[in-house]
Amino acid sequence: ALPRDTPIKLKAAEAPSEWEFACTKEPLDIQLFKDIKDRIPGATVNDAMLAATSLAIKSYYESINEPIMNSQEDLRATFVVHTRPPTANIASDKWFGNDFVVSSVRYPIHEDGPSSVVAFRNRTRILKASPDAAVRYFIRDRLLSLIPNDKVCDLAVEINCKYSITVSNVFISSEKMTLAGIEIDDIKFLVFTPMGAYFGLSTYAGKVHCNLVVGKSCEANPELVVAAFSKEAKKLHKDMMKLSEKEVKYMSRAITERESAHWLGVTVLVSAITGLAAAYLFAARFFATN
Image 1 (cartoon, rainbow, N blue to C red):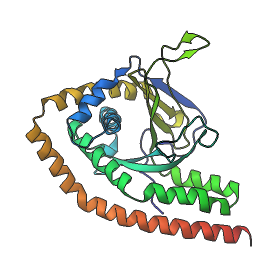
Image 2 (cartoon, one colour; image 1 turned 60 degrees about the vertical axis):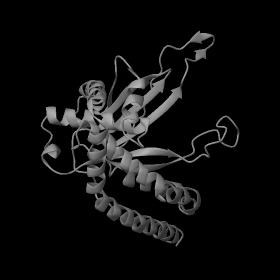
Image 3 (spheres, rainbow, N blue to C red; image 1 turned 135 degrees about the vertical axis):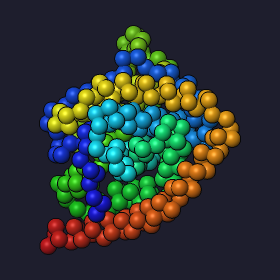
Image 4 (cartoon, rainbow, N blue to C red; image 1 turned 120 degrees about the horizontal axis):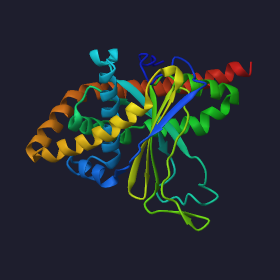
């Protein structure tokens, strides 16, 4: 099994029972992230947003002298991968409700601004091309039904709590919505996570909020992290606009070459782990019934 992430601020030693949360006071315009992604060939708005969250964590850790910043370690985050078909009508009886699997990504907290966008672009590309989501979907729909529900919950907690944070990017609506005829000015999205920290972005009517929920036992300051997100996103935009096309190509090639050997190893490792996971679930079912 993969080891747990190194204990750090934002990651709880055990499931928190009390929480603190913070949200950006002023949302950012979605166009800022669109401008950033347009400077990196193949990047997405999501890559730009993830880069801003990583840079916010990096800035916060540097401000409190978090020991991980003096090492070569990164932290890992879980995120939701929707498994509905792109054309699915989410309001229909068939597709209404939750339909997702949980995947993970390594956060490049040692990368600088523009380099962070390239790193996320490369990592999300690999995840999209890999069988990771398909294997997780198969395990969820076929194998988990073979073991008792209480064991499934135990497995989910054991696996997901190895990671440092949960991250999500929730698109709520491109236009303002109404409730009982009254226009809704703003909507934020927050969840609790047993690992200690939820780092969520929510987009509503062209505006992006950063929302952070942290267990009190983490002894972290969510207000500082959220403030760092806004600051780092604006700085990232400014830095990206300064880069020439030649500089972007050189940076992209250098990071891709540096990470290629690492990701080859990760791909092999993921394939091996998913195979072992399937065997483990069958074994768990066997011992649970005998």
